[in-house]
Structure formats: C-alpha cells, structure tokens
Length: 215
Ligand SMILES: C[S@@+](CC[C@H](N)C(=O)[O-])C[C@H]1O[C@@H](n2cnc3c(N)ncnc32)[C@H](O)[C@@H]1O
Image 1: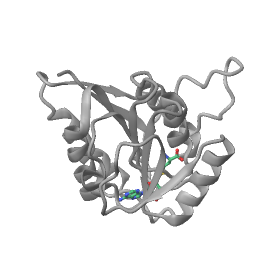
Image 2: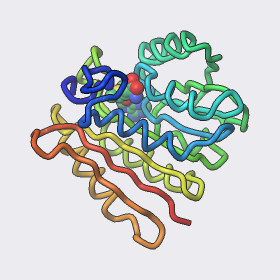
Image 3: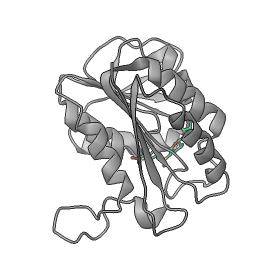
Image 4: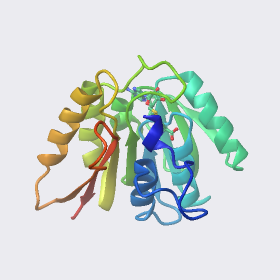
C-alpha cells in the first residue's frame, strides 16, 4: 500500500504528485465536481487526508461527513483537520444528520450512511484497506463496503461522483476488489458513467473506480 498510495511521494515537478499516485487522482476526481457549500462524504476517514481535501474543496459553507470504525483513526483525522483550521464535530452513527455546514466525524461502520445522511451528496469517497501504520487486520470488508456503496448510489446528487480506491495487495484485498469491481461493472450505462484507473505495470497496485450519476 505504501509505495503508490501516498500523494507525498517525491514528484517529478515540485508540487505535482507522481502520475501513479492513485490517491491523488481519487482526490482530484472527487473534488473537481465539488462547489462551495456542497455536501461530501468520506466513507473511510482514516488519518483524515481525504476528509481534509473534501473540506477544503467545499469551503466553510459546505458539509463533510466522514466515517471510521476506529476511534484512534478519528482522533488522528480530527487533529489534522484542526491543524488546517477546521472545526470538527462528532456525530453518532444512528441519528440523521441535519444539513449544516462543518466537518462531522462519525465513529460507525460506513454501512450506516443511509441512516446518517438525509440529503444528496456531490462526492462520496472510499479509500479501502487498512489504516497506514495501524493494525493491518482492521481492514474494510466486502459486505459492509458493498452495503455502503449501494446506499451511496441513492444518496448521490445528479453529476455527483462515487470514488473508490481499492487495495488488492493485502490479505482479503483481492476478494474485496473483485466484489467492488463487479459492483461498478453492473451499474447501468443509462444512469452512470463508470471509469477505472490503473497502474498497469505494477501488480497488486491500488486502483481507482469512479461512477458519476448522469441523471
Ligand atoms: C486506507 S484507510 C483510509 C485512509 C484515509 N481516507 C486517509 O485519507 O487517511 C481505511 C480506513 O477504513 C476504516 N474502516 C475499515 N472498515 C470500516 C468500516 N466498516 N466503516 C468505516 N470505516 C472503516 C479503517 O479503520 C481505516 O482507518
């Protein structure tokens, strides 16, 4: 996971991430549909880097909702967000969240997204796998990932994007990847534009799947 996933790797030009930084592409493809004031979701907050990118893209009038099962991940995410001057709120995974500006961290499985979110989102991201530097046994799993992705489809606004980074290299990652691939491949052409972005000369590299709601 570490070789290709970090947008902080040395870059060919100062300030630009390497071409094969899949996480950078995922942030770019999620953030390019966001406007100030939009609602965005991070299904796997982890250390908060994606959450922070989403929050910066939607500005102070927007709302970001970020899920993670691990308290330690959310503590790291909260610290990063506060370092960027953002106000962090905590929200339970079993209550509907009103549309309200700010960043909301939810310590719950992302499959509770349908209970928490009541309003259409413009971007929903998931960076699967395990927390870098954390317990590699605490991974995202096909059942809850697919439940979260399925609900996300119904929560996306028109032209909204579902952006998923898959890590096939760790134990369980290939199985989850196969399930997520099938999910994206079965989205109907009439309603979804679906894109896959892969590093083709590196086996087990992370890859990206993106679905954009057409109507
Ligand atoms: C690769 S990390 C996410 C990285 C993060 N997006 C970032 O920018 O730092 C994956 C995260 O998914 C979380 N996770 C695993 N299963 C989950 C679930 N069912 N619901 C929500 N989060 C989950 C893990 O705790 C871990 O922090």
